[in-house]
Image (cartoon, rainbow, N blue to C red; front, side, top):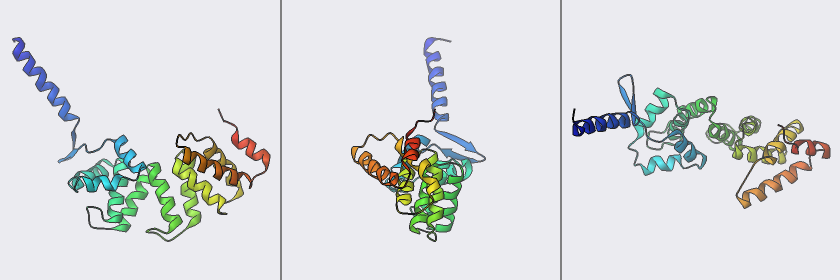
Length: 211
C-alpha cells in the first residue's frame, strides 16, 4: 500500500473515532452529545441552563430528553425537569418537572438539592415548608455547595432550625474559599451574626480545620 493510500486509511479511522465521540446509540435511538457534563453543570450553577436552551432555539429538545430519560445523566435529568416545570420549549407539566428535579437530587446533583431547598423555602411549585428547605440546604452544604451554605446560614440567622446546627453550618461557610470581594464580605457578616448565637468556645471549634 503506497503512502497516499495509507494516508486515506488513517484519515478515515481518525474520522470514525471523532464521530464516535459525538454520539452514541441506546437501543434504536441515536443520542447526540449536546453539552458536556462540566459545561451543563456550569450553566446550571450560573442559572443559565434554560436561557441556553432558548438560545439554541429549542432545536435540541429531543436529544435533551434522551440524555435525561435514556442515559439518566443527572445534569440532563435536572435540565429536563426544569424545562417541564417552567414550560421552556415543551408543554408545561410542573408535577412531572418536579419529579425529575427530585430524581436528579437523589442522584446527588448539588444544584438540584439546593434548588429544592429554595422551592420549599419560598413555596415555589410546592407548599411552603421551611423546615424541609433547611434539610435540603444542610445536605448540599455538607457536600460543599456554596449557594446552599449561604442560604443555610441565612435561615439559621433568621431563627429557623436548631442551635445544634450552628457549629456545622458556621464551619462549612467559614472554610469556604471565595474570590469575589462582595460575596466574601457578605459571608463574613453572616458568620459574625451566627457567632452571636453560639458560645465562644464553639465558634473557636468551628474554625478549626479538620484534617
